[in-house]
Length: 315
Image (cartoon, rainbow, N blue to C red; front, side, top):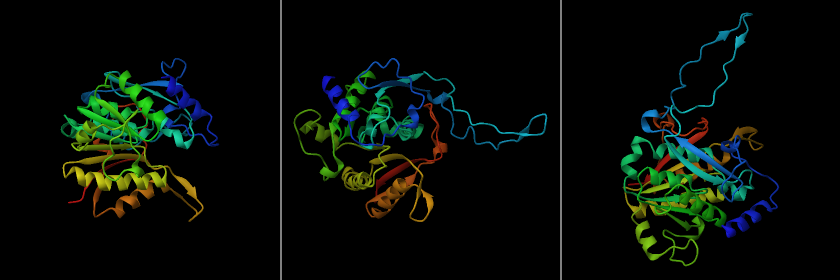
């Protein structure tokens, strides 16, 4: 814990001018954080029978007028689950951070991926599975995978502060015995990491277990072109090595910016991911998962800019 505090001091003394705050944390109450990061959030989720369908609000809106004949515009309400609190995940996280430390926050793509992990489609995939979580950040998806049935989850990241925070979050949620927090730099490995000593190093038994992984996860890792290229390249090597039963789920948010080139609104980071996936067509096959088929169990705004991809090795 002392070392984690030192890491956080370095984060907040960063000279990066721009800070980024996740929409998930806009209403965060950090008055009573019980951890070493500035904030602690409890994410309640509903059981299967209580999960809200993403098509619940898909009905055609009806126009209403007041007594003067003026149009009344219905405001979109923040979705509440039918019976929140059946389960919960407690996550320590930062608030506004520089881009290099956004892994210390929770982003909406992670919540979409968690919804998918608890969906009926994922039950058979995760039951007793070994999972590799790439760029795990705060470790939310790793903890969710354990609760959804995985027998072991390799929770990986390249940043020490994120790794220490993930380990603490795994312990806080009672899954520390199932989550193995390990350092993994996508650009520094071919297929498998090398055995290493020290904190978050890989043992020989880790590497043996990793070769039996059948599910890969990557939530909110698509925001930097270099990292995105490294992520897709790593999947193009790991998925074929794991065999035809292995599958990766990648969640991202299309962040739209006005680009001077072309003078139009675009989502350059998401577009780069699409291009990189297309470039690996001979090795990878990717398909979008329809969000309407993923019941919403966590409380967040499931914006239409969210995407969930299923990626497998090409036959």
